Amino acid sequence: MTEELLYLWFGMISRMTHTVKMNVAMKYGGIRGLWNTSEEQLRDELTQAQADGFLEYRDAGKVVAYAEEHDTDTAYVQSSIQPLDGEKEKNQTTAERSIYYNKDHQVVDDNNTFLYESEDGNRSLEIGVRTMESGIITEFEDDDLKTSVINNREVTIARLAAEDECYLAIFTKEGVTFTIQTKNLTEEELLMVLRELC
Image (cartoon, rainbow, N blue to C red; front, side):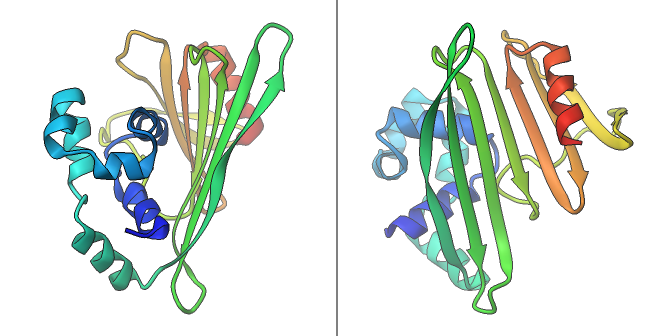
């Protein structure tokens, strides 16, 4: 598998957020390590949903067929980590940008994710930005959720069922879908971010 096809496979996995995918991949030494790990080991060490998500398209034939069907070329920028000096704690930023073009140079898939995380990993803010509806969560399955209005823009916000204080917010601005996920940030801190982005 080429690096481009590996990143394409990783982007095809849409059952979990980018942060979860990256945390699992790092456990196995990166995306190639995750690809090479046996199905038995993944099923033993991951949750059933995670294992199913990673294994669903982990077939070279499926990935090549997807690439040929969408006639994609890939522009991928390697993740970068930059330390940010804060008053109380040091943070790190990870950015991944993947853009898939067809031969007519039209974007057929994109995935831009920015992760801001405290050094101990206890607090994080993940911002996903994309124009296509695949790869990361772009909408809630529950149609009964009420929307909020921030800066005259409709935003759907949900608190996730988890031990940590986690929120997920989704909105669209000028044809671009923003997916904001937080861990151990307060509701007011989330709203501060949304007021800046909306």
